Length: 415
Image 1: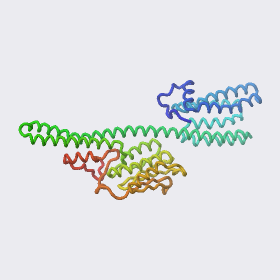
Image 2: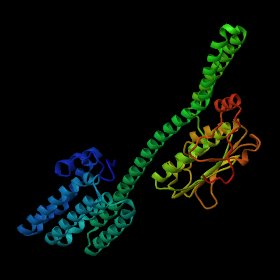
Image 3: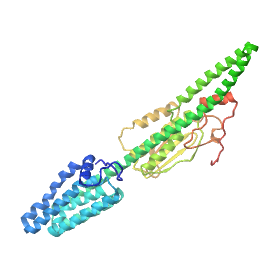
């Protein structure tokens, strides 16, 4: 069952009979629900065969009212919690009235009862309430000797839990999708900020130098033509270098980095209802290592969200490795692992290794490890997660021209 909205989001039609039927049809559950109403015949037909006319009429009316409430229940699921609980109270009120007319035969309604609770209650509640109601209906069916009611109770519990789990999965997928959209927007904003900062660093000094050199060349043009030509040559050199730096800056727009992947993982895992333990500060890594370990973190988080059913995920990163561990059910056996195969190929090309297996306390551990190497002293630098380190070919070229030293980051800096 596809859920339109888990919290009565804006854009729903006004609450009412027409709105409920419209939303129920949009969920795709309207006609399956309508088909299930055929079991109400187990209440109506015996009533006219065994009851007095007033009791049969009361049973019929109460059953039809229940059928109308039940038919609109998938639509009610899209509205607020208060509306859902009110709707559930109306269903119970109708069941009480139905029980007054039909007596013990109301036990045949057990399947409907557990299904509406599976639809209207949140998963954390329905996974407890549905089996309890099913056991009550099961025991009641044995006591009154209605074997078919026992069958309805068992089938209803299975069906209701399937519906409730499907709704919960739909809600989590929606949250993850919205979190990914937010992460994409934030990533674009961060990339624009990085590009703007790099362009400022690259072009600010270059354009100032070009302006000064042009003014000097103009003054020397008549007094010292040779010196003016030297200034013009210098202007050409700076212009070419600036153009190369701008191209190098723009070429890094889509690069994967470990820091940005950890920042993105936080929002995705929290949206999926998974507790996350990730480092706040990271060692500064060369671009090639930051990219490979970023891919490892991305693949690990993707598997945690899609397959693990975990409640907690831990991410660790150092100069040589990245680890993603969860407390879930582990990777399914026999499942295609295209993403892991691609990641393994990337790491092997760089001389690294990928290990995926069960953790010491259950769940799955993905560990990507690279060989020793990288710039000397990298372990003494710290990068704040979510920020772009001031490095790369463009920034380095700007430093060479300006004579600036690389920006220093201090171990333990809490700014």
